[in-house]
Length: 304
Ligand code: DON
Image (cartoon, rainbow, N blue to C red):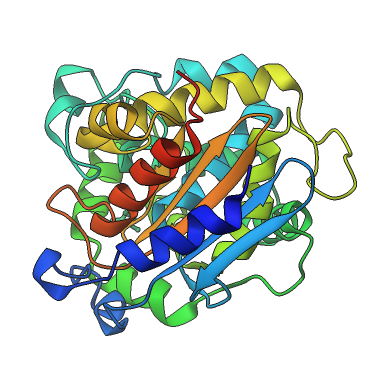
């Protein structure tokens, strides 16, 4: 497969345009990003890699971090975790409050904010220093020590995170939150503030494209059964109320973040990250969705 020729074609065909939408602004610090940034990095199963544009520039990974925290929590808690969070698609926005009351404080899945907040709470219970452990895990996965939280993004979200405060307090009132709500949100906002490049994210996500093995050392980090489950949740819940659309158009498990990043994996083939900060009305990268649709069309490869 000539991935570089396909990426070169995508680079020529797609040009970010501010008419497509706006960058995220509900976290003021995120609104400072240049909307015209555009990069892609594909890491193939044979160890080769392909890229263009701003693929080596760090951006705020936001909700993509939910895959990392779920992976750690699943390893540490196993089936216990599923007593507190379900694995059903939500069909609602990432920060929705509506189904929590009906479903008695059990979030629909670990990728909506409510679900990831429950995962954060679970990690606070079992880890002495969740921030340090998360950094260590992500650094190991992508083989780079140069991974850090962006303090200004974390602070900015903390200051304006009214919906997340509502979610955690509501779940606390319904008995699904154990730790101090401020401590949970502090960890959650920091996990979302992780700054990474397309290169680093694609390498880290090879875990999910390589049966749980590290992209470089081939060490078995998590078992293939876990990968199967996490990929299934990415496929059905990775894009909130646009999960069906992403499945239909792209045909790969993936995860988005309001920083404009999307990571998708094709098990046994590749892991790919696109970054373009202009979002569509569902909060997913507008250009990222289109580029990945063409990538799977031009390669003729998808899981379906
Ligand atoms: O909780 C929030 O609002 C953000 N820190 C993360 C949201 C996000 O990335 C949703 N994904 N598209």
